[in-house]
Image (cartoon, rainbow, N blue to C red; front, side, top):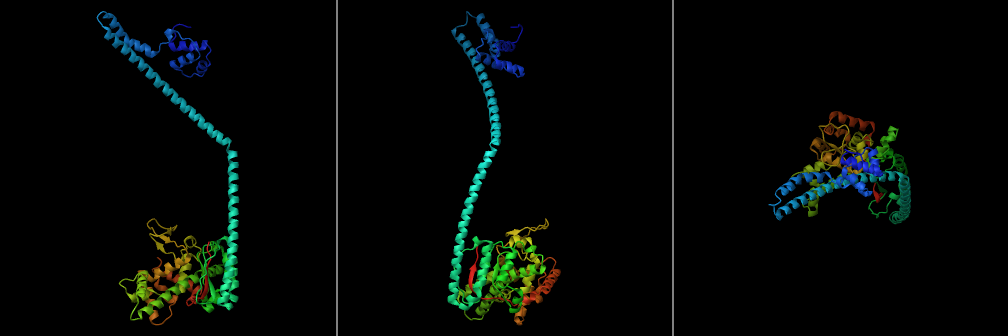
Length: 486
C-alpha cells in the first residue's frame, strides 16, 4: 500500500487488491462510497482491516475530546479516587452510544432511499407488464361484452313475445265487449283500431301494454292517447290515413277524433311540403285544444247551474272553492269566476301555437313540449340560446303536449295582462254572440314584446290557413278509452 494516503483511499486500495467487484464497479462509475460503506463491503468479503485503520472518524474525534480528561486523570492520579474513574468511564460510554446512534440514523436514511428506488422500479415494471398483457385483456373484455349482449337480446325477445300474446288477448276482449254493447259500431270501428295498433306494434312492439278497459255511456269512436313513442312523421301520417283523419271533413262536419299525441314527431321539420307540415301540426294540436275547451265548457255549465240555485250542497260549495282557487279569483267573486271560466277560441290557440313553436319544429317544442313559449323564473325550463345576460327567464317545460295547452289556457284566463281579452269575451257572451278568434286577437298584444305587430302576425296566420273554420269543432264521442304506454 502506498504511503500518505487517507483512510478512505487505503480502504479503496484494499478493495482493488482483493478484487472486490462492488468496490471496483462503483469506482469505475465514479460513484461515491462513504467510508462506512467501504468498510462494510470489505468485512462482507472477509478482507482483514488493520487495527489502526479500523478507527472511524467519530472515534478519533471522541478520543480528542476525552484525551484531556485522561491526561487530567494521569496528572492527578494519586489524588483521584475510584468514583472519578467511574465518571470518566461513563462519559466514554456515552460517546460510544452517540456514535452508534448516528450510525443507525445514517443507515436508516440509506435504507429509505433504497426502498424508494425499489418501489419506483416495481411501479415501472408493472406498467410495462400491463402493456404487454393489454391484448389479452382486450380479448377478455370482448368475450364478456358479447356474452352480456347475447343475454340482453334473449331477454328482449322473450318480452316481445309476451307483449304480442297480451296484445292478441286485448284485441279479442275488446271485440267481445263491443259486440255486446253495439254490433253496428263494431263493424265500423274495429278495423281502424286494429290498423292503428298494428302501426304502433311495427314501430315499438314492446311498448304496448295491456290496460283495464273503461266503458263510457256515449258511442261512436275510440279515444287514443299516443304517448312518447318517438314516432316518425311518416308513421303519424299513416295513422291519420288509417283512421280517415282529414281536415276537410273536420271543417265540414265540425267534428274531430280524440287522438292525443304527447309529443311532436322529431323529424317534422324534414317535411319539405309546407302545406303538409302545417296540416300535420294542426291535426296533432287541434284535438288537444278542443278537449281542453270542452272541459272548460262543462265546468262553465256546472257553474251556471249551481249559481242559479237558491241552495247549494256542501259538495257544490267545495267544488266552487276549488274553482275559485284554480282561476285565482279573490273574495269568492262568482261573477269574476264566470268571466274567467270560458274557452279560448280555437283559431287563436292554433295561431299562437304555430307562431310560438314554429309549427311544431322549435327546440322548445321538441325538447320540452312547450307549444306556446311560456316563460318561467322558478320552474323547470329550457334556457333560450339568444337570451341576454340581463335576463334570467327560461321557457317552461311540460311532460306532455296537453299539459302545455292547459297551462296556456289557464294563463289567458287568469293573468292580469289579459283582462281586456276576458272582458271583451264576456261582453260577447252576454250578447249571445259567438266567441271567435278574429274579434279577440288584438286584445293579446301583451303576450309578446312586439305588441301590436305580434297580433297582426296572428291575424295573418288565422286568415292564410283558414283557422277560423275550426271555431265550433267538437270531439266525437268515445266508447272505449285505450292508452298505449311504453
